[in-house]
Image (tube, rainbow, N blue to C red; front, top):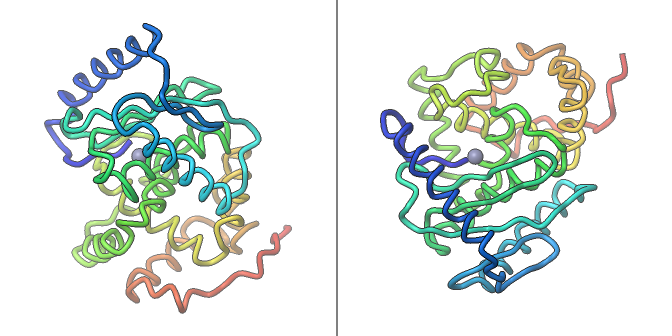
Length: 259
Ligand SMILES: [Zn+2]
């Protein structure tokens, strides 16, 4: 999910979105034929071919970056610009499938941003066969917003500099959108840093192990050589303090630390 505003608007927006999602699903059930369909997505309505081709390109980029999911079923990507209230887009899952990606911006507004964000949720749902921890999930989705990365890094530094970070052990495993911006901001930075250290495919392998074992300390130790989450957090905060200088991130040798 990607949100634009936070706070009191949220409950109302959720209700609007649920209604909208039902309406969209009903429209699909009435037999409207997709005007674009690929091995990844189905798109109906205005601009369907351009949207569909962009979706395919995004998924192919994700496959090149992280590896190909073993399982994939086509899902609809529905645009309803301006109708999301506080929500820019969302992804609905019903194990084992993605049911729908909805985008409440125009196609142009969403390119490199919300569309990439939501398709990353869909991609990792299939890749990991899990609707996994929100901090990592939103962090990964934010990381795909190549049009927003510099702005996101600025936001990370600004929030850290004014002392507006929560300890990671208070965010990891929370699986709620409380203080939602911290899930997005800190999640983005954690993923950004881990990918800088070991690359995208190494990170994807780490996520596979983390999802399978649900043991964050052990996965961090085996894949990144940190004793535990606290040791990782110290290193990551130092990276933030130094201005997220990716050129000077200590690279891994990408060998598992077997203990
Ligand atoms: Zn999201």
